[in-house]
Length: 143
Figure 1 (cartoon, rainbow, N blue to C red):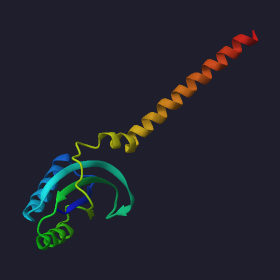
Figure 2 (figure 1 turned 90 degrees about the vertical axis):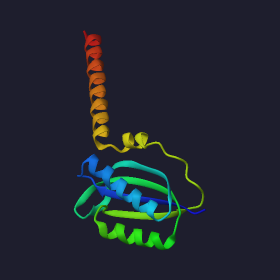
Figure 3 (figure 1 turned 90 degrees about the horizontal axis):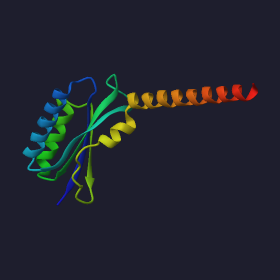
């Protein structure tokens, strides 16, 4: 059997309901090609390597499926390009069956800019407290 991975990017400014609707539309189109969906999960909001249609961030979505009719898949690919639902997509043929993925929560925390800035603020605060403590101890030693 043939296995494929479809990664597509949705505009980062859309609501979660709209992302769910896009996922539902794409999932039903994939199933109409006589393919079986294995995984269909939101990968998360990530910074794009370069601006695409004025977007610097995008919501990445991962879809693994078991291949169906190639002729119908060509129609699906054309539909996806013309639909305007996604700003970019890429299909890759896999050598083996992919594992079932629950979610990407562990990756989201690594790449979330807001969480990174919060960590930096906490580290700066800790460093400042340590420096103040050291200065106070030195002052006590001088007296």
